[in-house]
Image (cartoon, rainbow, N blue to C red):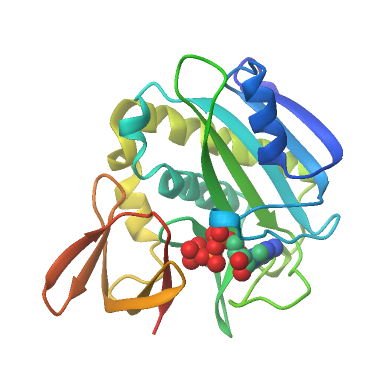
Length: 251
Ligand code: ATP
C-alpha cells in the first residue's frame, strides 16, 4: 500500500453481498477506522434507500472504507460530496477528463450523448465502537454496465485510453480519499467546496427535485453551501436542500 500503509487495511474478497454490508457487520464486531473491503463481485449491491447497485464481475470497482469521524456525526454534512471530489482527483490524476459531480452522491461522465453515471457513493453510519464511524461505499463502473437504467450510465473505459490495474486504481483513489478526509476532518466540506463547485455538472441548470419518488419542485441549481446543502433557486427564493431522500433530474 506504500504511502497508505498504517492508514488503510484492505481485505480483497472474491464475492460478497455488498462491500458496505460486509464492512458494517465487521464494524459491529469492532473493526477499526481504515478497514477497507473490495470485492470482485457483489450479489446485492446497494444504493440509497433500498435502491440497487448493479455490476458485472470485472465491470466495476466496488469497495467500502470505514472512517472514524473526528467531527462527530453533526459535522458530517457534505461528506458524500467530499468523497466525490476525491474520486475526481483520482480519476483526473489517471488522465480522465469530463468527470463531473452531481449532487448529492453521483459521479458523472460527460459524453457526446450527455451526462452519464460513472460512479455512486453511499455513506452509512457504522455502529460497533464508541466513536462515530461511517462506512463510505463506492461503486465505480470500469465498463459501461449492461441492462436497463433510468439514467444514462458510463464506464471509465470511455474516459481513458487504457484502464489501470484494479489495485492501482484502488490505491490511487485511496490516496485521494485520504487527502480529502484529512481536510474534511479539519474543516468539513468547506475544505473542498470550491473544487466540488468547479466540477458541478448542473451548475445554473434547471432541475427537478424528486422527493420520495414524486416530482416535487423545480428550480435552478445555484451550487452548494459549506455544509453540502444544495442551493436551489425557486420562484419563491433560494432554498437550502438537504440530501435526505431527494434526487435531482435535469430538465
Ligand atoms: P440520486 O439522483 O438520488 O443519486 P439515484 O437513482 O442515482 O438517485 P442511488 O441510490 O445513488 O440513486 O443509486 C442507485 C441507482 O443507480 C439505481 O436505482 C440505478 O438507477 C442506478 N444504478 C445501479 N447500478 C448502476 C451502475 N452500475 N451504474 C450506474 N448506475 C447504476
